[in-house]
Length: 360
Ligand code: ATP
Ligand code: MG
Image 1 (cartoon, protein in one colour):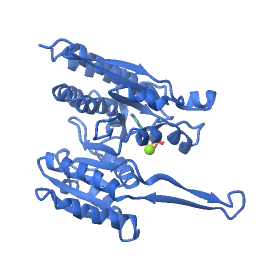
Image 2 (tube, helix red, strand yellow):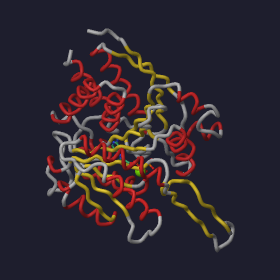
Image 3 (cartoon, helix red, strand yellow):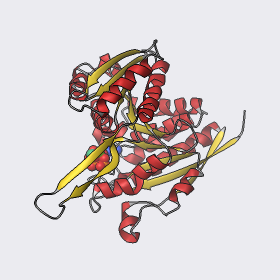
C-alpha cells in the first residue's frame, strides 16, 4: 500500500452564506477520506474572498489572486452572493473572472436521483433520470459585452451581446461528444434556439453537426430550449448527455436539480480540459441567504462536487468510495429538510464521515 504518496494542493474559497457551511463540511469529508484511504493527502489553503470582505475592502480578490489560484491542483468553491451586493457585481467580482482566466470553458453538471430520495414529480421514477449537462462556460450570453446609453434618462437603451466563436463551439462540442461516448447509452441532445436567434445559434447548430461526423457511435438529437423544458419534465428517460450554451444550460441545470429532488444535491465542475490550469468544483446552488448561518444547508451537493474534484485529480477509486458513502447516507434516510428529512448539516456530514471510515 502506498502511504500518502501524493499531496494535492487545494485552494478553498468558502465565499458567502451557506457557501461557508458547506465548504467546511466538504473539507471535513475530504480529510476523512484521505485519512481513511491513506494513499493521498490534501493541503488546503483558504482564501477569504467574500461579499462581506468586498464591502469592507472594496475588492473580492487581491490583484494577484488569479496567480495565487494557479499554484494549486484544484479549487473548491462554496458560493458567492449577498443581499447587500448586486448579484452582477459579486458574480463578476469573483466567480466569472476565475472561470475565464483559468480557461474553465466546460461546466459539467451530472444529475441523478440519489437512493432514499425521489423526484417531486410522481411521473419521474428514480431510474428514469440520469443526465450529464455539459454547459459552455466561457462565452455565449455571458460574454459581458454590451453597454448602456441614455442611462440617466427615461429612455435608457442597453445591449447585451452574445458571442459565439467557431473555436469556442467546437471545443465544447468535442467535450460533450466525448462525455456521451464514455457513457453506456452514447446519446447526446443538443439544445439551441436557432429558430428565433439567427446568427450565434445557427453557428452553434452547424458546428454541432460537423463535429458529430467524428463521433458516428453517438446518437444525436436537437431540441429547442423551450421544448426541452417540457421534455425534461415529461420524458426524462429519453435523454442522457445534454449540451447547451452558457445561459440555456444554467437554466436547464436548475430545472434538472429540482427534478432530481433538491437544488441542494447538485454538483458542478468548471473544467479546463487542457489541464494547464486548475479546475474548480462547486455545488450549483448559491449562497441561500434565507437559510445561511442556521446550520441546516444540505451538504450533499458540496460532497458530490468534492467527489468530482477527487475524480478529476485522478483518484477514481476514492471518488467512487465517496459517492458510495453519500448514497449510503441518503439511502438510510439521513437527509436535510429540503430532501424531506429532519437532519442538519452537521449530522449529515458526520454520517458521511462514518460511512467513509467503514471503508478501512
Ligand atoms: P445565486 O444567485 O447565487 O444562484 P440564488 O438566489 O439563485 O443564488 P440559491 O442560493 O441557489 O439562490 O438557492 C435558492 C433557494 O434554494 C435558497 O434560498 C434555499 O432556500 C434553497 N437552497 C439552495 N441551496 C440549498 C442547500 N444546499 N440546502 C438547502 N436549501 C438550499
Ligand atoms: Mg441561482
